[in-house]
Image 1 (tube, one colour):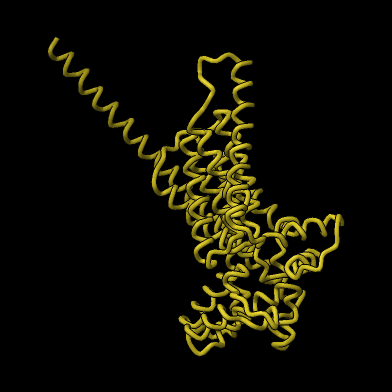
Image 2: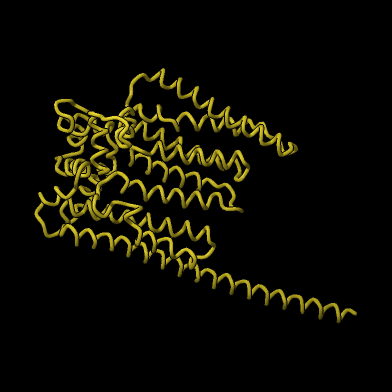
Length: 383
């Protein structure tokens, strides 16, 4: 009996060793397979960036034309944005550049405006700082253009990894970056209007969506790294584009609906809301307290949605009809609370810094004409 028991134990040990070995082999093969997927994603993203450069070069002959012709090729507001990068590079020192930014009397002559408050040009400021530190051999306008194209690598990679997480396999995710390159005219205008704000912002938006996909994936536990990642990507997106508030509003509404229907954990929705509020607050501070941010609809909606998601009327024991009626009441209360917040903010901040956006929308849909400088600038850009 004792011998049989010892034989059984030895067989069990051998079986465990075999299972452990097989598991280690499977894990190793899975690691190799995933590494191959990452390398292929990097190769496709690099090809996308290179393809954009080649297409831009073929159309503009950018490296072979005169400097003034390169600057002219930045049409409409693109040239205006590039001029702020050029302005920093040509400044003798940091303090002079900041003085020219904060006391600009050329853009809206004869008015003196703070450009860092007026426009989203921190990307030009950042690239100008990097250029003067690195002192590359390329001339400023060529180097500036290359950096915008390089940023599209993040765009392509983010789409690839988002598709990978949704499909569960990098093989199934391959069409996402491929079709992004093929249908680029429907997704980006960076190829022919390089310095547009969206050329800087959309890669970070795609990055935020990739992090969001991983965060909301079933089985993913809350971790501070997701909060940091969402804050970083959302902030970079917000500081680069003046239309960030409208994109954030759509996202906040979609997340509220998913949370209210219990499709995703409300705790995770609140973490995303926290990252959006952080981004808006940082943008508000860095843009010298531009009142467009606190007056935005999303700045009023997020606190209202947070409160209603914390004070739910629905209960698990409620029937289908009662649960539906309570959901409708929650939505109505959220909208009402957001309206109250919006009216309170607008009464406290009486200026109309975002009026040009609504004038732009009215003129875009041919509802009314406008003489507003910013609205006309947006219309020229969208021609």
